[in-house]
Length: 161
Image (tube, rainbow, N blue to C red):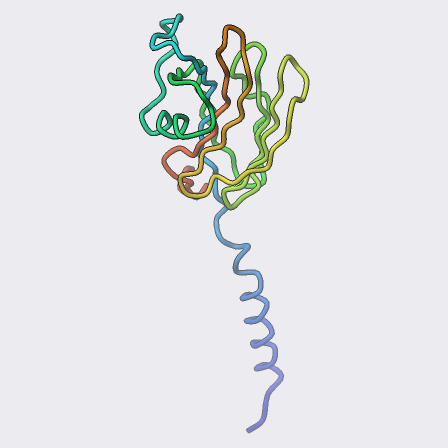
């Protein structure tokens, strides 16, 4: 049996296609939300605009090392970021904003900015039901938290067009 040059060429072409196939799949978007949460021991929020966090997040915060008993959402921002993309200047309050980059495969880089200055940078995964929480002390024996969690799902960008 002779091996023809066309068979070699087809074999080479097939090998090349198989090598690049993983990069041909649709890029994914990260659908997440960023929350500014206020923690306190008071059962009622002093501001009627703040609503209690949902039960799932409340359970996670109550099981965490944080000592506060009640948590209220001060602000909520939706994030829809393509793989390799970023969203800068996600404003959570007059003093707090985020720069969020989606690194792909549920990984993100979050830059916390307080009063216009970079406070911290974190690279985290939101795989599964993971929730990313950054916290700090506030006045009157209360605390603030920035919570980032996935929205319903990560979907292929081709589906969202």
